[in-house]
Length: 196
Image 1 (cartoon, rainbow, N blue to C red):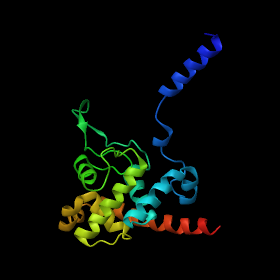
Image 2 (cartoon, rainbow, N blue to C red):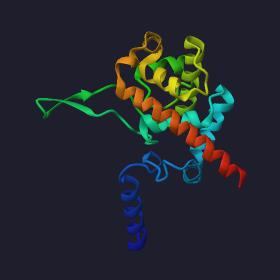
Image 3 (cartoon, one colour):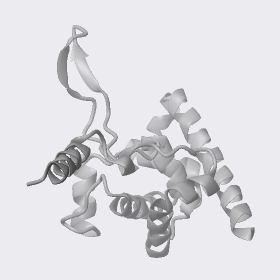
Image 4 (cartoon, rainbow, N blue to C red):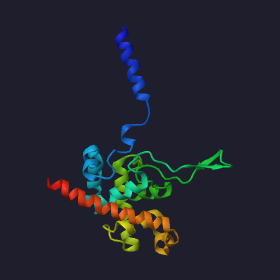
């Protein structure tokens, strides 16, 4: 085998082993939906598909994903430590773009998803958000366009939302307000860039 071919094989092998997959990294333009769509068109194709299937608006999905994972496909909750040094596992089983918990994800897969669905796949994550927000509409009467209350139910679970558990969490109410503001901002930006 020639040295050139050998060098190319070694380079390809090293490139394949290096770091995170680019699609799992955060996009550069999180505050501009038009630039975000230009940078990651597959994200918006996935959100439009979920909107067609479930009716949840793209800006609401995008704002929820932003709050949950900042569009990082393999996002996980932080590891907990005892005595500041002994790892005790993660804070929860939340994973991926949607930060869906194991049990909720399993329920989604049984009811609406594919057995091969993955929380680190943007298409499956947006479909999950569509499914979950529809459950919130059915169980709690929250309109799909109500980003604030949809997020509160998403974070607290349907029973927690019904009990109003979020009322004792001022930090969560602030996050929900930011989700609503971001959804409105994304909506306005997407309308403007589609008119161009």
